[in-house]
Image (cartoon, rainbow, N blue to C red; front, side, top):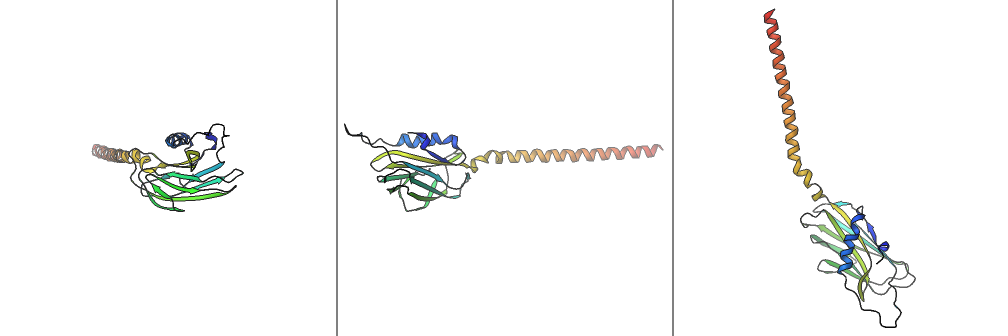
Amino acid sequence: MDFRRIHVTGRHRRFHRAVLAVAFAAAPYGPATAAGAKPKGPPALRIGIDNGHTSVRTGDRLTYVTKVTNTGTTKTPDLLLTQTLVPGLKLITSAPKGELSGDRITWNRALATGRTDRFSVTVEVGRLAQRTQRLAAVVCASAKTDKRPIVCASHLDVLRDAATDGSESSGPVSGWVLWSTIAGAVVSLVAGAVLLLRRRRKTRSVL
């Protein structure tokens, strides 16, 4: 697989190879080419997925939009477009309506030369696995008769719940330190004022 044909959206591009490797490793290989037959190359496709966000939190509703384009010179065979849903995402709707099976939603399509089809999936972010720091969405296109992906794309968002855990847990400690510092400063000022007042009274009594 030529990774130059894999398109990634979002700001976390350094993670996309690991995410997509899972999708490719899980896909079964299709039947071998018959002896003596000239192998036919896969359709030329371009694919991308985006939800318009770079960070999300529990309770957010996200709409992932996938666009797949036939960049070749001939019509594609029947294609299977698959988007994988991370456990904890609740499917709200899809357009056009896809077929949900387990953690995957699929559509069947054949694309004419130069045609771009658009698919959207709206989900709600629910309770995700512990220590999840990034929410990943992966979409792949394959020939219906061969489950190996032709092209894939991914989108990654920072999970703000995880990103703020550290700051929230350190907040009370930081606040306690701040108030302790202020209280100490006030006590010092009061003590200084009392000492100064006593000195003035002592000076006056001497005079």
